[in-house]
Image (cartoon, rainbow, N blue to C red; front, side):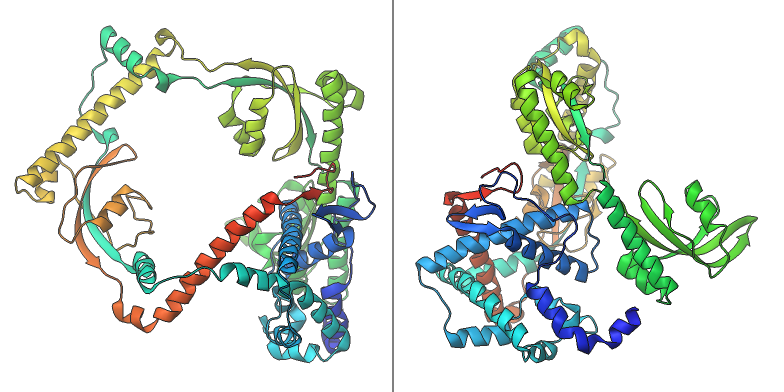
Length: 596
């Protein structure tokens, strides 16, 4: 079937390209309804402009096609990101169009023609029908423009988008850059330094630290009381609505694997179908090749299927909790008494689509509405949901425990005791929460945390010893000793680095920190003072400095200036747009009719 389609490429090319630009198609999980919106078929507004369901679906389709053409797996998280980007793209286009309209920044006919011929957009460049050997082919694009329908579609696209480009150019035109500014910027990226350093780590101090006396411990506790403060905690009642796939999601995954299975049975190459259909990121790009698999390696259900196949045969479709599977055994052998099979594999993942997630979120929102009036227990009972209660939990553990975003964790801690909030999206579910109890932040009495205070006391003693060692090394250097000799007096090793840049990751030191900044501030041969970083003490010596390549800078100065100017313009335009967006009235009806 695929081979036949390839032979018919020239026949269907025009249809496919035109469809790619303008035709509305079904998008998995995106048959949205205008929930809460004031008008049917309208999913939001930007100022006075209505964002229609068709406009939103078109943007979703184009973004999703771009992901697929990059051979990127589209899971539920990616679908949500595509939906977010689609919405943001539409909002941005409308805001910029409105600004261009205020300033009458519309293209001339000649500008329009030039743009159509020379600036095909990314979703066109990524269209496989306009590529040769997986790379965009401009001659194919120019040939496609000979088709009137495609040319009209492109004219429509550029009439909508050129004013947006012009407003960006208009805003960025006030940005300038100088030769000296460019020189400084290039120097930051090109200059290199190599250093020798000694590090004194409190954790490596070998001296035994005796337990403090009761008086010493009490004094230390009083001095460092805030360090032992226990943060505020909440006891929560939670109702979790799991992110489970709907029957439609299961059908979608089944249909994909059935289509793949049918194509292979009709004679299509297994590896090509695997590349196109398989959701297994590790094997799809290699045509589904899993390599040699030992008997017992796969889960029992799949293992029994694989090792029942003879070489060259393909399995029926196998359903597991995660999705649908098809295997083909290429070879069989026995090694060290263990059966092995070289396996090829196609996997169709069963996961909740964005529409399913939206419906679950809606149910959670309905639960919140009832719970705020009658309490979470009553609401959950009426709607048939189960509840759980958490142990006292600090804000820092909400995200790792439930998968909440930091902003949602903040919102939960703002809920008053006895009140309900949500829904909050976690990793595996949407949650509605009720605060059962707020436990204020406290500093425990010394008797309760005595062991912790003793450990902290001993660490601080080690830290002071480490500091004194670093000070002694520095003093010895000041009196004429070398870095190596001064370090040896304390049994420490001087380490040397390879040349590195300001933004490098330096083994043993890290990146973008005080040690690296100090290294670039010193001259060759200079030795630093004591640098305290991450509770360790460093002393460094600059062994070599490599300045920027002046000849390269002079030869490429205009290119570097243009690059810096472009970067500054993008930053300036982005900030300008952020201010524009904050002032704008943007309404989003896609979920609960919310606005922001």
